[in-house]
Length: 373
Image (cartoon, rainbow, N blue to C red; front, side):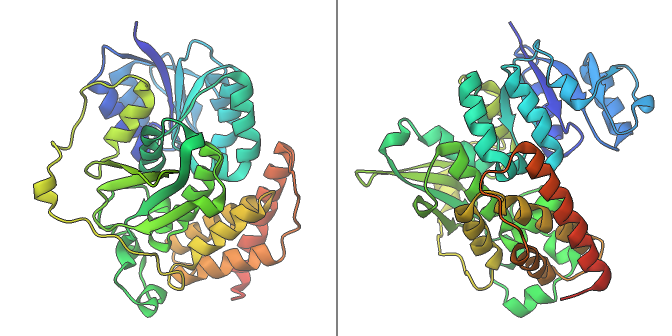
């Protein structure tokens, strides 16, 4: 029988690549629903090609060839075997919780879900017997390496270093949007590409890893690996290190997540060759240049509502940078200012989380309107 799947964020980078994977595995999957955003033309092309029963878009009246359903109703449809959550931002949290409450497995490509509410989502998934399979290449790599988490001493998350790895702090301060989006290894959406340039993305991944694998932050290391061949590694208690390697292509972790625990021949960028790669370099991150990484570690350790504040401030600041309102380093300044005034809640409810998220976003936008840096 074909596995029934819905894709939230089908018009985004991960969603489009997921459909490319499924196109090669049409005998393995049946698409139940596709959810896009404002790119209605592309969504309608996808509907015509993959013929889902349901669809979501910001303008429902423009959907052609499928019945409109809100995101949470898509995620309440128990005919789904798995739902790929590939929407960007806080919008992914409530649908993910809805899917978990309905016993549907999750292929998770939405960082905010665990950064904002990992203490709620992970226990709920365990209670409901739901698998959360990470799509991020780093967490997917760790997932593939782990056999028994009790025997793992350390998680080692790799980072490419982005476009400013070999640039100075001054270069980063004066960086244009175009320079920031010129990632040397990965083709991603604009927001995540900016986060990769500041290494905030890696900080968010550290928080995700803490929740996904139940590891203390002191046992999660980040190492810069410019070639992006080693996607991450784990160190066992006996000193053995096991890594997952592959060419930088999101098709592989996407396919692993949606076909787990099976593996099939699908899209391959090309066969991996050690001799062609020739060398693999590793170095410690520059904590002074990539201050966002330390902010994320500190926020994760404090826990509670702090990661919610950090994430909201960062996201709004990234949007402001992309619109040319602030400079790249102002993103970090913004996050720090919001964290300084944040009123800490130790165990925020889901309602608290969304309230804090809204409040921080409002205050962040007010900060930009006055340019108080």
